[in-house]
Length: 393
Ligand code: CMC
Image 1 (cartoon, helix red, strand yellow):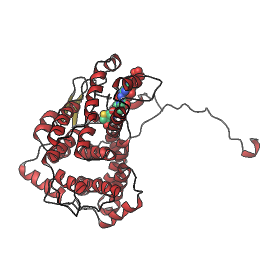
Image 2 (tube, rainbow, N blue to C red; image 1 turned 180 degrees about the horizontal axis):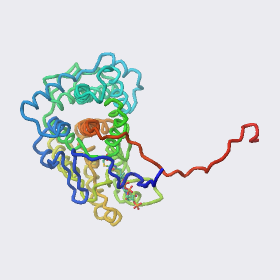
Image 3 (spheres, rainbow, N blue to C red; image 1 turned 90 degrees about the vertical axis):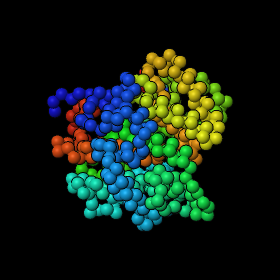
Image 4 (cartoon, rainbow, N blue to C red; image 1 turned 135 degrees about the horizontal axis):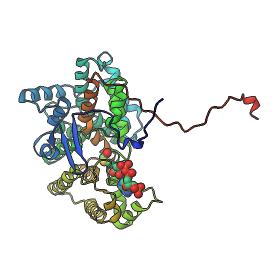
């Protein structure tokens, strides 16, 4: 008992101390381990950022080489695991497959799952980083009825993923460096975002000392929702819908403002950013560049820009400090790369993997961590006495 403080949606509750990611929502600042997101996006690589988030420092050349080799050597998944894909209907959402497969990995490494054992932690972290792209690409191949493409160790982390997604045995395929670079950047931007819904889920599940695969599979489920990572799929569907409906952005803007309608402008607004989402700024610029370089002319980009401009000049959005978030333009780039809409949230999960791992590692390595256990304010019936069924009429 005692006094319970209510904070619905945890608007103002710190659930942990963390040294991983810093956000200033008023100023639109995002830093991983002290480094500005703009700096990392321009000059680092996704795998290096993964190391930085998980281990706290940028790696030396030797440390990076060792880390890259370690991750590269674990990219294959067990042949038996491949058969599990047969059990999913063809149109299963790839987020359902991703979460299930990640959880299933725990069954293959039964004797290396103890979160309190540093060696078990290390090998689980390596396996997750290495195998998630393979699992994700296989779910796509399954959905289009093509054979799985085995990972290739001669390729980069991103190059290998693209090869597993897009190459077919019958034809030569070479990874387009423009796509490889753009994807690397997108994953860097998604790599962590402090105590968001999915990271908090990973921490909460992990706080019970469930194994890392179980905690991350739960995080994948949390990310799936349309108010979180699922928004990137919804944005492109919304833009497509506006396009098919004649391209009148104001009609949709008005619908988003209408409190009798459940429609929200997807890709707009954020719990923490009350200013431009710094990731959105970078992504918008990248979308323009990538589409130009790839020679793609997507009418949805124009609709997105019109919608953004209209919203930024609209009192409703200005008053509520609603700006485009990371998901607003990312889908347009994924689409230009040939990644299907259903896979967008999976791409987010690939990017967020190092962040989830870093948050979990920080939590589990802290000896003062307690199991997460929120309280409540009870609003149910007062005490009453049971009446047997035969006396209830
Ligand atoms: N369209 C229209 N109205 C909105 C929107 C929107 N996208 N976002 C917030 N509002 C309104 C909301 O109706 C409320 O109005 P009022 O004060 O009149 O009741 C006010 O703005 C505050 O919104 P809230 O829902 O109380 O804010 P929140 O911090 O609980 O929600 C959010 C944040 C991201 C869930 C929300 O802005 C939203 O639903 N956005 C659309 C979905 C989306 O793009 N999600 C991705 C977020 S970024 C990446 C990620 O986290 O994965």
